[in-house]
Image (tube, rainbow, N blue to C red; front, side):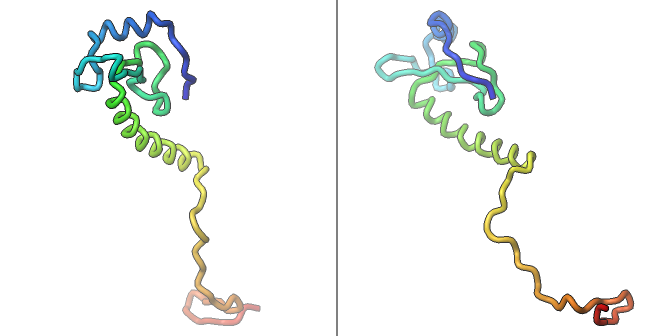
Length: 117
């Protein structure tokens, strides 16, 4: 995961100019200061995106909130998969109880049960 950084104001203005002051989520509504807009990573940093101006886009505040909520589920799943892959996943609950049996007995291949010596 890469670290976020601040860009120069010209970079943000360039993104707005390229988008023609329209929301990049697909609703294509006009970005206004009254409603508010935010800059978001197209591919989030938590899912392997890079922190470059090419990965940034401007979204209206309500659209950004919806996108962030949808990404939270994908990010949590990716974290679970990563932990399982690395063996960091902890066991939930108590371990399963084994069936009680007499350890003094053993069963031969013929099926005969005898006492261990």
